[in-house]
Amino acid sequence: MQWQNITACYHSLIAAVIGRAIDDLKENDLNCRRVEKDRAMAFIMSGTCERYCLELEVDYKAVKEKATALFQEIIEREKPRKARYVNNPGLSFFPGNTGAA
Image (cartoon, rainbow, N blue to C red; front, side, top):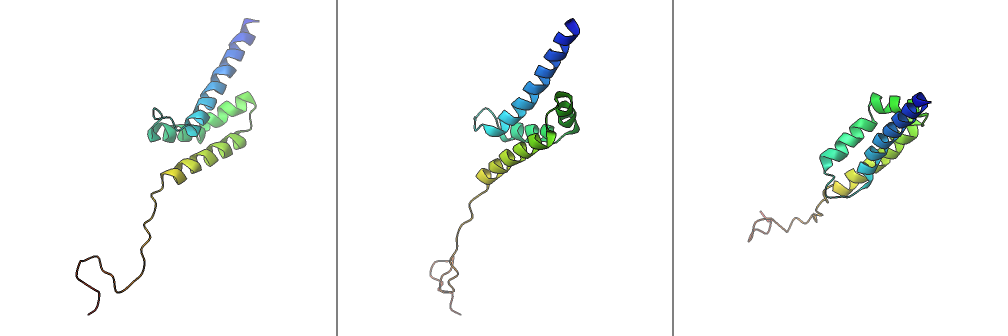
């Protein structure tokens, strides 16, 4: 009987660790910096997470795909926006220079 309780606690702990890693990728919390998000993604992509999923009989591929999609959103949000420059030979970055030779 006690062995079942220990196993259930172990499974709950593993599920909580995986769930926390996914939550870290979801939230835009100021307390969850980019380094925590990187660590969460590294954990999910690790063999440890894969073994945890096998122990819980959870589809590791689905967990990995969900994490990858969330991490991709983070990357997209953090991409610097490119400035749009008009290709106009008459304009120059230097005042008074018209670009004419």
